[in-house]
Image 1 (cartoon, rainbow, N blue to C red):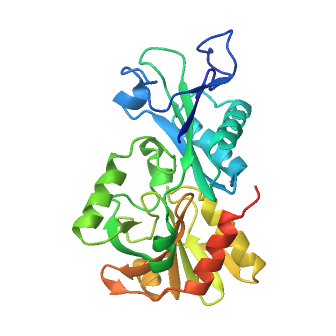
Image 2 (cartoon, one colour; image 1 turned 180 degrees about the horizontal axis):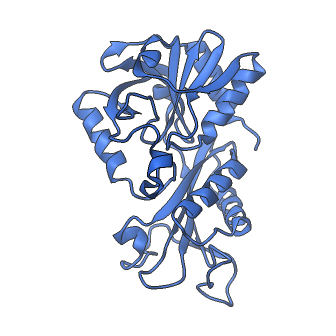
Amino acid sequence: MAVLAMLNRPSKDAPAHDPAADAFHFADAGSPQLSVLDLGATRGDGIFETISVGYGRPQALEHHLRRFASSARTLALPEPDLDAWRDAILAVVARIEPADEAYVKTVMTRGIEGGDKPTGWVYGSVSPDNSRVRREGIRVVLLDRGYRHDIEATAPWLLAGAKTLSYAVNRAVAREAARREADDVVFVSSDGVLLEGPTSTLVLRRGDELITPGTGLGILDGTTQANVFRFAESKGMSTGFELAAPDVLLAADAAWLVSSVRLAAPIRAVDGVEKQIDHEFTAELNEYLKHLED
């Protein structure tokens, strides 16, 4: 059963929807809640986060909240009231039916066009079963993102690195992957630098080292990737950020796309070229991610 909480005042910088009401209220997730004039629906003008919930605990919650606020600043949205959002998230988590794995999605839009009240909600549900993907791995294709690797610095108005509701491109590349008989995508910059997946962060293993594409590339600050690095460091491995070309992925001892709900999905083929899966490390890593304490 899905759980939905609607925020009454998503930002302290904006008026409440109802000055006399509580900070949030539970609503029927199966009934309409959003105006057809909301800019989230008409323009994709908003931000979101998806938070993994393992055994009833939201994981990397504070990291997700910081990234939520950062995305709001990038879009010049009113600053989210993180205390209100945190309370709503924890309340939704408490109402999700007991399960080993669940997730919570937070969404804030600019609200009704011409208005001054952002719209905000928290949605929670049990996660789909990702055990097969974690065990058998995924086939990826490399696709040109169409931007240079330094797009974040040269064209900040393109909102690279913000987690926005504008997901038309992300959905289009998923369809392109399917047309190429693949499961997912790794983006490459127009000047040949590995970036990220449409909904995930790329992590590579070289011997006893884990690396991920360097910072400042217009890609998301990966919450799951940060915890993957913590796991690796607890096992005595080194970790780091690196500007890398596609041949680094092809030569890596192992590779994963990591994200909040799917967790660590090992890459078993790149553009049709098979890659070895480190099954033992992957299984241990996913157990760690599922049992995280924030």
